[in-house]
Image (cartoon, rainbow, N blue to C red; front, side, top):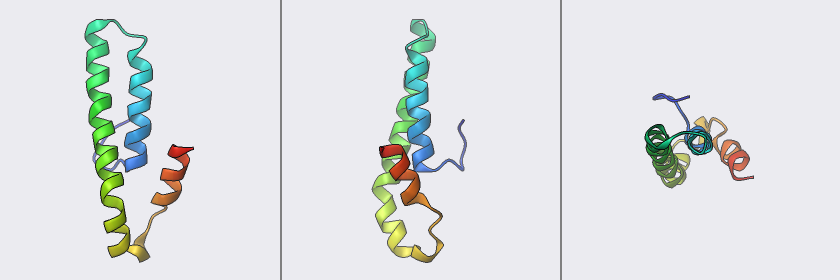
Length: 74
């Protein structure tokens, strides 16, 4: 799962999925899966860092992001 419409929590979950998959792969494909996981982890971090400012500015249009982060963190 990837694409421009992924939320921060979705990037986090995808990173975890790819890291789990990497453990089952040989060296070459494993490195690719780890690199992809790193990209998703970085995007999740960027989303989590920016979220408070976005929330404060667009509070009325909140789409459930806090609940998504709570699910990922639990």
